[in-house]
Image 1 (tube, one colour):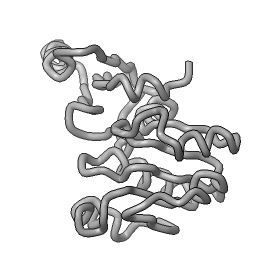
Image 2 (tube, rainbow, N blue to C red):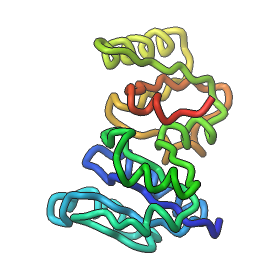
Image 3 (cartoon, rainbow, N blue to C red):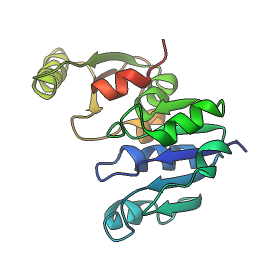
Amino acid sequence: AGRRATVMGLGHFGGGVAAARWLARQGAMVTVTDLSSEEALADSLRTLKNGAIAAYHLGAHREDAFRHTDLVVVNPAVRPENPFLEIARASGVPVRCEAELFLESCSAHVIGITGTNGKSTTSAMTAAILRAEGRRVHLGGNIGRSLLDQCDQIAAEDWVVLEISSFQLHYLHA
């Protein structure tokens, strides 16, 4: 609460939206920045309409959003060597991904699935096997939706199957 967070890459598939919404609910002052225009991000922006987002920088990134913040949450589509991320790192700002925020906030059993090929199939199959055993399962990550918005609905005894990209792995801190 009260800290500044920059969400880099709102995107079209929910990860940036979920991170921005979750951070705002935690009391952070959230800045959303994306290279795409307002028109291109209309669907994602619509879902944040009632959120408490402090600022939007669309169509271009601004250096101050990466220098003068307490946290940068980066969309997995953004390459790790992005110059704005370098600005954040050089300024001592931690760079995280939405998956890491989820893992830090979720108390359930988590199975992370990554690799070059077959991640979605393996994730869906793993979730189906767990469901067939009668377990309560949440499937998310790159397979289609962020689970960050649902952390408060996921119980410690639940299972989460999370498809994780190589870019997300890069940002995870052990």
